[in-house]
Every structure is written in C-alpha cells, then in structure tokens.
Length: 213
Image (tube, rainbow, N blue to C red):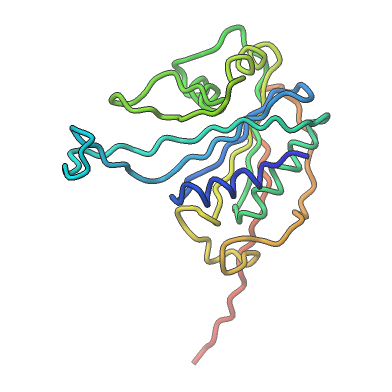
C-alpha cells in the first residue's frame, strides 16, 4: 500500500513550515519507486559565519523536500487512489493528474522539462547559489532515464492542512482543514499520451443563508 498521506503528514510535523503544494511523480512500471515532493513556503536566515551571535545578513527560500517511496504497487489505479486519498484527507480543493509520453532526451530548459526534473527530485541548478530541492531519492536518476523511455505521471495538489491558506468557503472541510476518509472520488484511467490534465474536484462551496432585514 502506498503511504503518500503518511509521509506528507510526517513531514508537516517535522518541518513545521506551511506547504505550498505537494507533487507525486511516477513512471508507469509496477513496483518502481515513487517520488513525493513537498514545496515549502518560508525563508531561512544566512550568516557570514557559523557563529550564533552573528545577525542574519540574507534570507533564502526554503528548498523543497523530495522523498522516495519504495512501497510496492502493481497498477496505476493504486497510485491514483493513494494520491486522491492524500489530497482529500489534507483538505485540497482539487487534484490534478498529468500524464506525459516518453521523451527522446531529458529536457532541461523548457518549463515542462524543469517540472519533469523537479518532480523526480533532480532540479538541475540552484537560484543565486541556493538549492531548490533537497532530495532523499537515491533512484532519481534511474527513474528519469526510465521516464524518458516509458513516460511518466505527476499528481499535484495544494493542501489546506499544513498549507499556506485556509479554504474557509469549502463546506467539506473540518475546522483543522482536513476531511475524514476514505476519499469518495473514484479514479479515472490514466494513459500517458500527452493529453490534457485530469482534474479531480474535491471541495465544494459552502451554502450560506442570507438574512434579509
């Protein structure tokens, strides 16, 4: 069973910074590792020396955290169910799934290419000398090579639980920004043919009564 929800909740508790988004990347080959990346909102202080008494002289964006899941799976349906469950339980308004076909070579300059690399924890460069992703993904290079030949899938959602904003008008949310499981949304078949993203709507607008004086 894929433990996407468990790993995200563990990171929320450990890092204690607000989340902007969560991405899940996989290749359509059974029992291959899955990469879960958490994109944080926050700044870290930098000093000219390691002396604690020295005031911070600059601030850098907190890098994203890429984690490798080695849980076994046999069908793409299992990945979809696990991503839906995580997005639902963490209060996301929706979940977008993108299926990309194989590539002749790994791109490094286009927007799609950078998202593809970052999704597998392999962002090719930093910004002003700062890391964009801190990866605990030992098989990332192998996954990128396999994705270039077989295609890949990515799921993206923005959690309310532990996220940067609260969806106060979402009638499905509990006060802490979560929803009770299991997720009631059924997954749709995934085909890596480069078609438009599949967007699962999870939230619903709350109905407010209007009192006329």
